[in-house]
Length: 95
Image 1 (cartoon, one colour):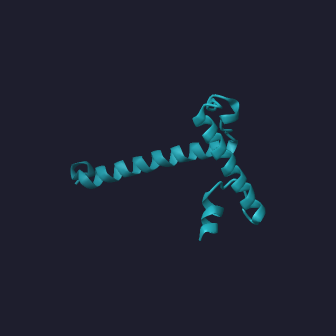
Image 2 (cartoon, rainbow, N blue to C red):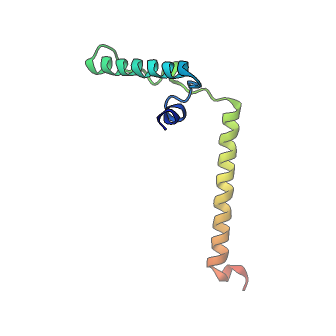
Image 3 (cartoon, rainbow, N blue to C red):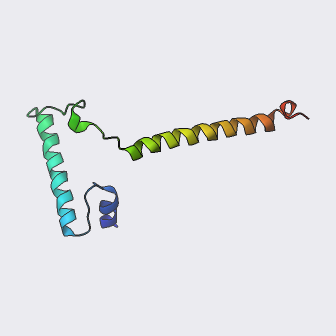
């Protein structure tokens, strides 16, 4: 159960198919802990969030996903509004 948790939910960008993957995850966790302690002790500064290293790359697939999500959300809201208006307000149904 522990291995499944580590494989699926901890540092998912590192493949943990074998012992090598677990070792890489362990090394990265130790490095992150060392960096946290160094920052708390004042030996290093926090990362600049405006740095290009910390920026997310938007690929065409990501843009299409955002457009599709927005379109589907608006369509569902409009459908829900029209359905509730016609069901709850019989005067607007033409009855």
